[in-house]
Length: 147
Image (tube, rainbow, N blue to C red; front, side, top):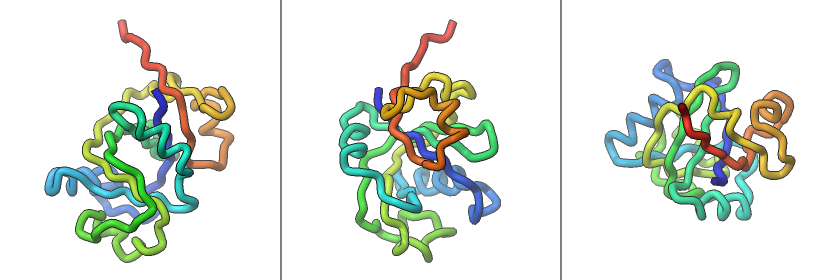
């Protein structure tokens, strides 16, 4: 299964944290928009991710072992309606070039990265995430049965 791996930080997140702020809007509206800073995700990668059912993003919190799965509805370059964006970065929304519509966020297993291979290089995500400057990678997720 192809998924988008996205590393993020808490540089200007509210005290509750990035994921909690996003989950709060999901509980209110049934979805939230996550703004990806930097370059937008390529249309080719968007198509590959959205062709999977469910389409998912693996969020990797920098410098920690926190990992989250997000089930997504779409990825777009159009700025969404402000009320569906967490308040702490609404004032920067016009500078964000890529938006991910998330309908569910939940904890991923601690070892989830060991089950992901970077699509472009064949490198395990556990290695690539330590050496790549790119926070956004298309990966093949190979879920293994837990005994």
